[in-house]
Length: 145
Image 1: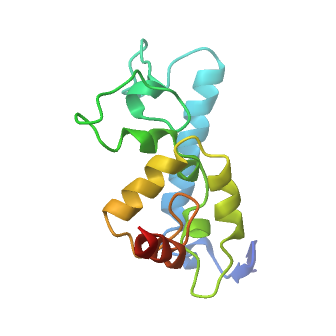
Image 2: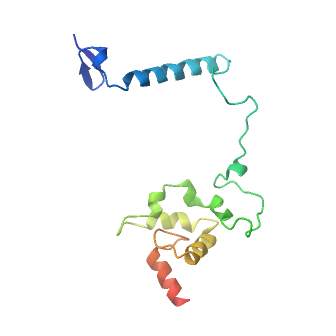
Image 3: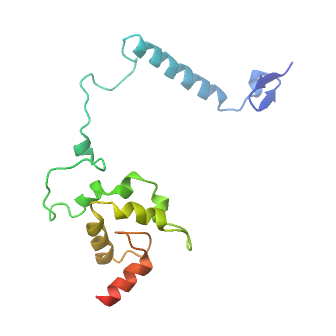
């Protein structure tokens, strides 16, 4: 008799994919830990301390304001506030001939747009949208300066 297991029919459990048992064991472990947590206990084997805390400012989470930092100390601190860090990077590095519209729309409302453009110009960034400008637009801007 065949066992129906999703998209495949197997003659016996021994014919399952080699990783199937590992995945089942992992899932059972996670379900047991979740049940224990829901019951008010602590997941066995947990290494997270009871008093854990993550400070988003210390992590550098985009959009979370940091205390004013001396730019000489960290010249790239502005990147923590960049909107592009919170979105799909592919929008900022489109294929040749691809649309830059979405990236430029995001850049238009970004608080660190000028720092981003300055960085790209100083570091001769050859690819992607930086400070709302494509590589071609940055090249033209350099020629005018």
